[in-house]
Length: 244
Image 1 (cartoon, rainbow, N blue to C red):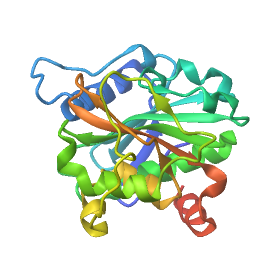
Image 2: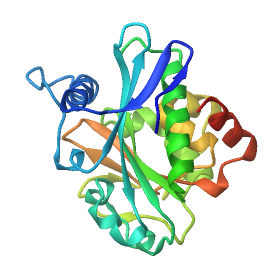
Image 3: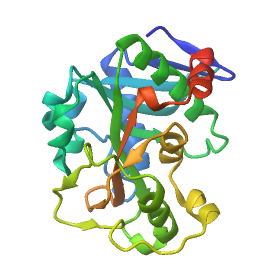
């Protein structure tokens, strides 16, 4: 992928070890804020991933990042980051190329959504170039108190569950099975409580697991999220690629 620009931002893949370190430092600020000594958020999954950087064009300041890992088909999905937390045996039968999207974060103060949009433009271009059939990953809610997201989880359980043929099984030791006990919910409150990344997935036709994992390491709740690219509405696909 060549560099993509839109407005005051540009997106590119990391080209040097220093680029990767910058992404890991931003990840530490966003995913491990309580760990003051954590200068980087790094793990073994970084080595085989592409690292997408979104920067201010004028200053070079890093304002968003994520990592992308390609799998030729579902047979290798057990080697993904997400497979640590979810039983993904059903997705092992997925026939097309898969792309795991992980550690997606935006710098504090970038509240207008512009950096997120530029990131999605770059991801869309990569998905198109690689012929990706399924984009997947973990979408995180801040904190581990599920009651704070009661409306959001009720909406997910009612409207956005994965098709049965792909539905992840429970694997993590601590989960919230939100689809078992559906309750009335306020749709507007539910969407306000959704993480921006998850809202983007849902707007494109994405789906989620029927349970959330309580991740004590990062202090989050997360749901497995999948997006079959053929399900993306044509108008949205054109809009993403037009800027990409």
